[in-house]
Image 1 (cartoon, one colour):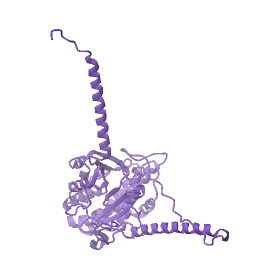
Image 2 (image 1 turned 90 degrees about the vertical axis):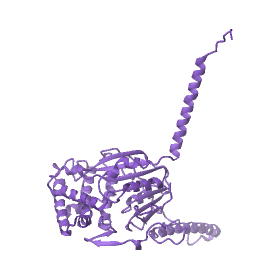
Image 3 (image 1 turned 30 degrees about the horizontal axis):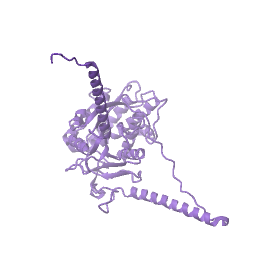
Image 4 (image 1 turned 120 degrees about the vertical axis):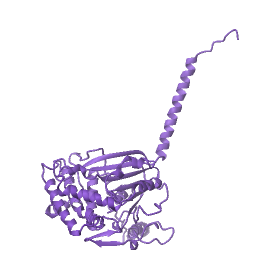
Length: 437
């Protein structure tokens, strides 16, 4: 992608800030930020040479300090063991470190093709280059949501599920934010870090596996999916499984980008950019895993039984055209992410589904890259160019909060009924007695 993209990539690991409280969200967003990192823990020290004048007190203090240190060391050893045990085979039926339902890494078939690494028949690569792209996109999401990882209201969650966890950044962030909750991230391959928060677990799992999800019903406070357009052949099944496995009152949250219509209007209809998007859509449909935004329609959740369903849209600038510093940085990052996704989205898909030669795909990707950069880096022509991102959320009926609301409503109705009864009694007065009766 050239020196420009290499220069922009250095922003990937930085925390993207806002100037003067400004923001790039074009829809509705929630304020706030993630909790700050705890200070590193230091082991308590104890004297190696006790004072002869107070041997007994110093010996007791030393023993107490030593026991404390040993407990701390044991805790850190358990943490390390948990981290190293990610993807390991469970040893007993009681072993909860890694679920027995999770596939083993030895069961995953990795395919080297077109200079990339793939798993099974999934068209997207799952290698370090792709993980770098996902990390960039994670930074973009953080900027959009003011450093919030989720848009739904969570109250002391105990279990959270991240389907298609990818690089694992979201799951690890949630593990830091909710240290008392268990965060499970699943994907079709072992690509996540092994040094993770104590409460975060990664599993190899296919959400479309025949037979459905094997977690218990009513298990999770939140089921989260992000950047999964084109990943599934049947979204109805995914949403139905999520409904079953959410706790009453639990939330589903789906985040994805649109079908690029918002920025296609900046290009000549006959140029390579709209043609490439058309080819990608055609190949995805032929593969049985169509891309697009159909899975982000509210009816998809409503028909599964979800309530409080909402869809919100956010704008993401493409390129450095915004004047505000934070938006400009996001625009650069989004351009880098788009450029780095070209071959990832197209190589396997167009070769396998449309019968293209690998060289043909790379040639079109090169033309696409040149045209996109030409337009996106033209400050005047690109002004207003953006992609749209949707967030679809819904809640499973029930839960303690809903019960409390129903009780409050019943109490209010009873109070209103009592008030009406008192009013009627007062208005009746003393009955008249007919002497003839």
